[in-house]
Length: 372
Image 1 (cartoon, rainbow, N blue to C red):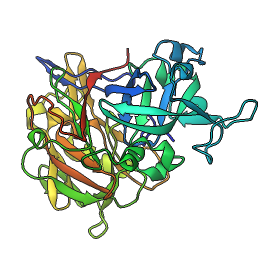
Image 2 (image 1 turned 30 degrees about the horizontal axis):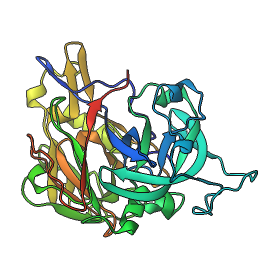
Image 3 (image 1 turned 180 degrees about the horizontal axis):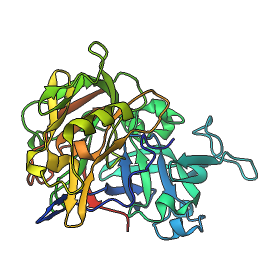
């Protein structure tokens, strides 16, 4: 299972920083997870568009693996080799055959073996199954700062409930709430974080708007319409709307080509963004509330040129989708409620808010960056 966007928009983007000419945005946010006993630390991309934990294995000799921390099963006294996906808690016997998981991304591939071990977000821990990659292509893995990917999609996109790490946390009954929440700072110096087991009201303005997941698997929901300059454009069906997905693994905002073409026609953005201050807001109406992005949110600009933080959405097999990636998440605090299958959105409150975790929650700081 790859991300909704197939990890296709990570490389070659610009790092978030303020410039005299405008702003450039980060293309990835990653944080630490601990695996095994004693714990082995890994820097992972938290990806709501996929449903598995992928870590490079000590057995992997590919350059993409060697440049990162690799999981060593022999150094963990809670590790158990798994033979088959449909026997997720049965240990592999010596000499037995085993499954090899192959994963295709938009730009690259990986394959690996099944393992069960202890996974921790700070003080929150559970047992879960995951994949240790014995082969990784250079694209995209060699060029990224993170070691692996931790999928946070709903269980329907996982190979089984034991392979959905957050679902295993829910089963462990050690979280305050069966949610996780994401806050992404806008500037390189801003804080960014993912909180497991709770959400932090000090990180957002007003009340959360809750909207149900329409098709379990991806974090998919109804978008009433696209707005430009605060005006509903009628790009979505007046009754059924459009289908949207929140994807923390995508650095961009994505829309079906038919909608994106119309958006371009209205925004009329020139190559150098010379009229940055006059470009209208671009918004998405969800549950009757308009969630707007300014030109500084959806554009990147420096002395060499200007780029849009949006592109046509890929074919996911689920019909046309509006994919709200980091471009959206930097402006809106988002809560992912796996137990109730709903999403909560609120305007992100910019500024510092040191984490004070309550029992049953864990806030993992995220670092911003871009592939080298």
